[in-house]
Image 1 (cartoon, rainbow over the protein chains, first blue to last red):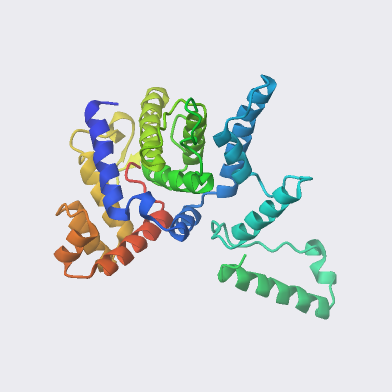
Image 2: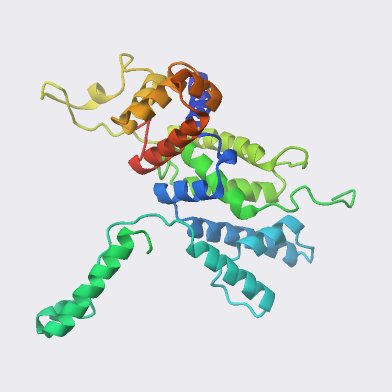
Length: 149
Length: 185
């Protein structure tokens, strides 16, 4: 990349900071909203980092060395909520994190596709069953539309 | 720690660092998902930087804030990766239609010296993403054409309050995030 292109990158980054504000100044909710709008799966990214840092911790343990405190702290904070644990404290922390994640904006994916268990036998359903399924579908679409799902 | 004191990274909110760095990496990628020729996403790059920090390859003395340090490291990694991606990327010459309806292929469809320079393309892309929203157009014009940088400067130039500038800034974030803004595309 020529030197002038480096300079161009630097200038556009400065313009981006001026246009959108430096990420340090965004509120937590704004960061969450931005990542959701862009479509980043933060959970998957956190899990990937957790796994990479777990490997680093494992290397220290293999050498019979203490795991450095920042490594241990990151693993504690970014531990996926669905990992099994026998420690009640860790379980409590995971539950709290799981609940906090529920309230965070999620990336909007494609329009929901409702898959019926009776998809290939819809014609065989009674009118009452059909009405229940249609009601559930409408309810789900509404919730998706309102951003609850 | 050699002196037995608190580690410079003690008390770091890693989840917050990861999310803010990801938002920054997305700026660098210009809201692109993958960098051509590398297969690496913005989130991969953030993971690399955090791992480098934990391995001591990025030095943190605890005297300066962590996030600007990591942003700088991420920026340099991004440039290095872009340079190596540029060396590996194969240019595919696609058929393009000229304004007259005539089809061109091969070298004719590559950028020429007559094409607008990158900074002009960047500005054009911002205005295109904004569309007809006059409030955002004025906001972008104040920054891109008049060089106003702080909310106070922009507010005084446009004759509005700084709160209004903050609102426009937030609105622009959403517009750029949801329109898949790609100045280099």
